[in-house]
Length: 450
Image (tube, rainbow, N blue to C red; front, side, top):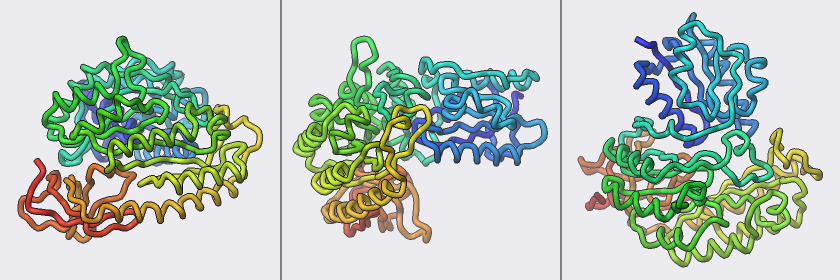
């Protein structure tokens, strides 16, 4: 027996996929999973570290596990934290026995075996992120009773935005081969997954680094044609400058692609966008949004903006606020700029006081709350398939998502359903009957959407 392991995954869906791949590798190599940390021979934390709050969460989780591990157990830290702080991690966290960088997930079993043999790995320094072959393993997605799973189509990012640590942590974009993605999608469908969520740091640039440059549009076409068990395909995340006519037209014409777009624009002042090293202007962003809404009237658009970027003036903020009011995103998140160590933005002059940036963010979200309410109310009377994923605290209403809601970040739909064949994992037709800014209410109809 190789021993037992406990694995804690922090951060984004892309990290979740990496954790599932590590778990699949370990099981294949004879290690057994335990959900009880103090019983595990090996405790693994797959960390997020792209912003300071994520770093703090990761450190807290590491220290919590270190304090609860049994005698002789080994603590391994994987992912973004050791990749970002490769020179500091062992010095600052003596509790850690080994690290696995973002290009080393495939070596997880080897690391555990070396620790088991008594080898000290505290001098290891993660190298540059490399290939993505580790993703090509039949993994078991997180337990969601067959409702949805994430599928990573690329790793890294080549956009080099001035505020972002991702390229330095995850490396440049490396797309997976289409056949590997199709094989994984088929495997997930065989496990009962009904909704497939494609993730990458920038899905719109998928394939540009591969021979022949396959496009996201062609990948979506193949996925929906060759995996009949998958009922809905959703994509996270899009960049406006890489949003092609081919992709928009495929989304408009393919009924299996969710009419949903997560399009983080970050700002709407051209002066700020230039300093951010973004590749598009506000006019180009607005033009793409207008075009896709013409093609797909029912489209739900989520976006993200940032206040307080260095040099942001009151006029820049007014431009952003006006843009939000004019475009009327269905969903919007607003974050206060954080000067991340090692990024060009952290070294820029004219840093905006945190208090000023926070007030601006609050104004954005105050305006957006009313917009979200009005956008949600437009859906009252709409009939749409809803994937049931759980029940409310009282056990009375199902909680679910339609094409318009991504997991964890969007509203839930609460559904009154009494038919005996309604269950978690079913996908009945639901009529939306009420709406708030952050949730919707519906009633199930007689027909099912199989």
